[in-house]
Image: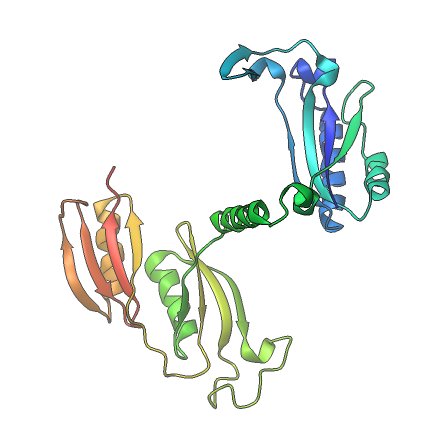
Length: 279
C-alpha cells in the first residue's frame, strides 16, 4: 500500500527556521534507511505558508489569498510518499524518525487511494484506463534517451580518441571476459573475448554508452551526434580534431541558425554536426 506521511507545521517551521546541522544529518540518515529499504518514493520539505497562496473555491468563483495562514497546526511542513506492506509497518518507520522540529511535533500517516478503490463508480474501467495512460505518460516524461555506439572492435581506440579530441571522460568500462555472467557460446567473434562489452563516457553534459559489439560487422548509418559549443574557436578546434583521419562532409561555415556549423564523419564512422549555440 502507498501512504503519505505528513509532517505537520509548527511555530518554528512557519517562522522559516531551518533545521540544525545535527537534525539535517539525522533526517538524511533516516531517508537513507528508507531508500535502502525500498520504501521511500518521494519526499520534500515545504517552505512556510508566508510564501504560499491559497485559492478558495465557491461555485464558479475563485479567490486567491496570500499567506501566511493562521491555522499553524493544520498546515503541512513536509511529506514523504512511502510504499509499505501495511499501516503498522508505516507506523513503525515513523516511530524511528527523528523529531523533525525543535519543539513537540506531529506526523500523520494517510493511506493513498489506489485505482481499484474507484471500481464501484467506474464499473466499465473507462476512467481506470485513462489513469493508466496518464501514469505511463508521466513515466515516459521522466525517461532518458541516450545514444549507444557499437565500434566493431575499435571501442578502446575510440574512447582514447574522444578523450583527446573532445575532453571526454570515461566513467565505466567492462570487457566481455569480465562479465559476471558467461557470454553465450558462439555469440562473440573469435578474438573479441577481451573487447569492451560496455562502456560509458561523457562529452560535455551528455553521457554516451558504447561497446565493441559482438563482431566487426557493425556500421554507423542514418544518424549524427550534435556537438554544440559556446564559441567559434572551440568549434574550429573540435571540428579539426574529429576530421583528423575522418571525412569533412560539410565545412564549417556561417548559417542562418548558427555562426559556425559543419558536418564531419570521424575515423570510426561516427557522424557529427558541430555548431556554435546561438542565443
